[in-house]
Image (cartoon, rainbow, N blue to C red):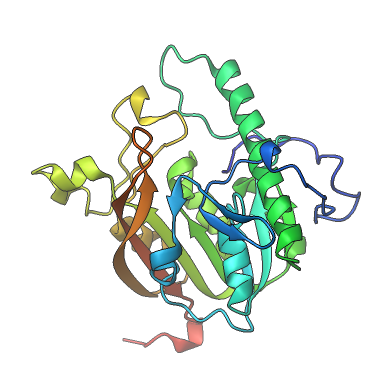
Length: 282
């Protein structure tokens, strides 16, 4: 949930401190849960996505124990609290209603109404994060902002994750670049492979290092790109993460018509930074 629009810090951030002041949220009806979550003291809440069965595949089977992690696009916090459970110290980064989502500029779109609706939705997602933060007794810290201005005050991290994020931003390379500047070793990028591309006889076009725009406004104003894993590998190579591994897996998405889940294909790229002295001279 990232944006290109930079706006003033919200009242939840103290001057000179990039970290949001933790909030107490107790009303579950004020929340929107993007992922299915098992919340202590509350039970299971259903979200659009259920990552539980294949969550380790979603994060590339990386070992998070003892690592400092920057999570780009925390949403309602499933990934954040999962990585904490795995032993990580997590800084969660996301939009707040102070910032606007990157909206795809389809001709004839009523931007003002869409942006307003998105801000209301973002507030509910933020509420869900803080609801869970309290329930899990989490120690994670939160920074609100845009991927085009990730504050250096966060400091260096061992791992950064950008999972199901880059398809939603107008400039995915810049977003990835900004995240990578704070990463000492490992970057994890996960994204969806659209179903129609798999069924399309020309789907091999998707698996080339190129960006592909969505077809029309019915593909949602919040989705900019279909990004094949090959272009992520190329991006990471430019940014100094020359050792990459690509894996494929499936995650569960809730069908809106009958509230059942279907399997959706994903890929995960894990990149490791190679220092200049580690490169093989030819």
